[in-house]
Image (cartoon, rainbow, N blue to C red):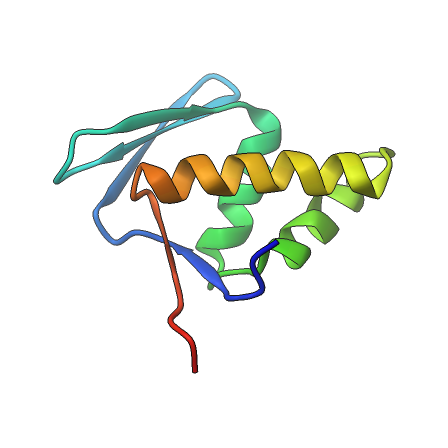
Length: 93
């Protein structure tokens, strides 16, 4: 699990689609649809960035699920967003 803060890429455009949120990278054209749970995480990232443990905490505050499951879900989403260049990671200090 990454401990460096993550932030939305400045090249990402967002559009609501019902309860979902569609992310589009303006340069690469990659798109990603977040469900309501993913949207909670995106909104946390958009508030100034967050580490993966902070994202897990954000979900734990809303969902009564085992922490291990929340960690796995956050890890999967973060990997996909990083691969799509929709989020960026702060460099090592």
